[in-house]
Amino acid sequence: MKKFLAIYGKPRYLGFVELPEELELEKGELIRVDTNRGDELALLVGEISEDQVADYAKLRTYSEHGDGRPKNSEPLVAHLTYKSVPGEREMELVEEFRAEETEILHAAQDILGLHELDMKFVDAEFMLDKRKLFLYFTSDHGVDFRSLVRDLAREFKTRIELRQVGARDEAKIVKGLSSCGMECCCSYWLNQFAPINIRMVKEQNLALNPAKISGICGRLMCCMCFEHQVYHELWVGMPNPGTKVKTPIGNYQIAGMDVRKKALRCHCPHGRDKLIPIERFQEFKETVMRGEEWTSPYEEEDAQVARVRQIRESLSGYTPSEESKARVAKARHESATIRKEAVVGDGEEGPDANAPARKSRRRRRRKPAGERDAATQNGSPASGGNAPNVSKSPATDSPVSRAAPPAKTATPPQGEDAEGEKAAKRRRRPRRRRSGSGKPPQQEKAPE
Image: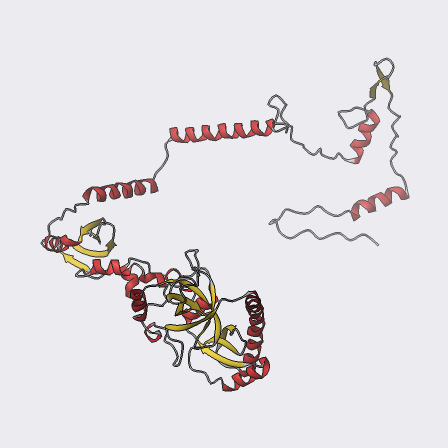
């Protein structure tokens, strides 16, 4: 018999299953197994040895994970019984169940709203024989859901079993993308949740920003413990991050750990950072406490960092000279010329350098009525009169003068016409004053 590791259920439970020697199955295939939950399908992860079985048996229990686990729940690693290889009909049933589970989840949430319980449904799952329906939910405390279970069983006509899961298990069931852009580790390869605390984050020189160190479950990301062992071994016997070493010239502060060089990074009183090898930290501490200068073996690299910092500081207050300004202006002019030539080359007309400058339009002042009549009577173009039009004959192309029509002689109004014109002038709207010059003038009333 060959022993395989298998995953079953939406919460990705682990289990051992023994398969016959003559059965040739590969990693990633589905098999039909009998579990303590019922008849369901399991995914083969791979063949394992007896030593690996012993290692999996030593895995921590759910109660040691941080989120806790309710009693009478699934064991961390279970023993499964192989039944058969699923056929096409069984695979079709599984697809139908998955579509039906989505509708059941929405209906269960509506029923939950009627009971007003402090809980949230995460997902639903049918067994292969459809005799049992599992509903996974989250809650911050214990909930009395006996009346809810009766209503759910009456609605779905099957046996209902509610399973409370933690915040991490919710992320494992729902799945999603982490801040790194990859799928969450717990939803596709992580087999257990290791306890994580904020000390692990500090030892890895990470910023204590909740948005960057928390996963979609709201807890510290599982990847915080992947490299923690390396940092933990380097910090053994060393002071904690943020520790200050008091000296006559000021305080030295431990900033973090450089894993690649296996050295402590320390802030110096004069503003520079130093890398101190772990094995020489005691020597460094004794030297600086006597008020002496300690030379780091990475002095060359420190000097290079200081040069870069000095260049940055000098550039922050940099003022360009007249020569550099002229070079920049020349480069901008050349780039603008190239862009104009490219536009002309595409078929558009560019500006003509020889074209005369466009004159600005000025509004001509309107002359009084008397002057306009006099200019019209004289017929001079300069005074606003009508000049004789000159055109070319279509036959001879010679200029032909056309006499302007005789101007009408303006006769001064007499009698009632003169009085009406004077009244019209009085009714004209007075000219407005400029803003800020006081109140606008009162409009004169026309005589009755």
